[in-house]
Amino acid sequence: MNMTQKGAWFGIYLSAMLVAVAVVDLTGILDYKGFPTPGIIVWHMLLAVVFFVLPIVWLNRSRKKSKVELDERDRVIIKRSVIAASVSGFTILCISYLVALFLLGAEASIKISLLSAIIYVAFIFFMLILSLVVLVQYGWGGKDGEK
Image (cartoon, rainbow, N blue to C red; front, side):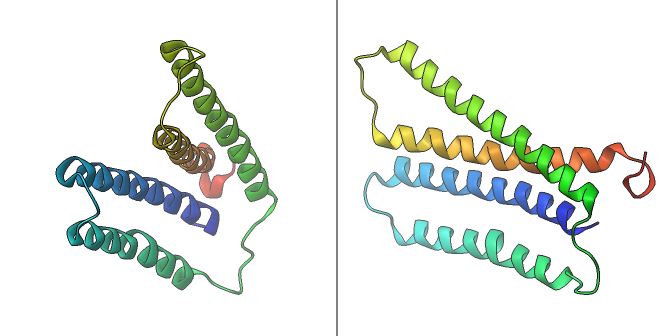
C-alpha cells in the first residue's frame, strides 16, 4: 500500500470523523439547548485525539524516506480523483441551493447555520468521493495495479 492509498483511507476515516463531530454537536444542541457543557467539550477532545492525532502519527510512522512516494500513475490517479470529487462537490452544492430556492422561494431567507451545514456536508462528500475514487482506481488493475 503506497502513500496515496494510505491518504485515501485517511480521507475516509476523516470523513467519518467529521460526521461524528456533527452528530455530537447535534445531540449537544438537542439535549442541552445552550452553551456547550463540559461533556461536549470532552467528546470533542476525544474525537480530536482519536480521529486526528493517531492517524497522522500512523501515516508518518509508516513513511519510508528511501522510496519514491509518487510516480506517474499516482499523479494520474490523483488528477482524476480531484476532478471527480470537484464535479460531485459542486453538483451537491448546486442541487442543495436549487432545492432551497424552489422550496423556499426567491424572496425567502435561510439561517447562516443552514448555509454552513450545506457547505459542511458538501465538503464531507468531496473528501469521501476523492478517497473512494482513488481506492477504486487502484483496485481496477491486477498485480501491483497493472492491467
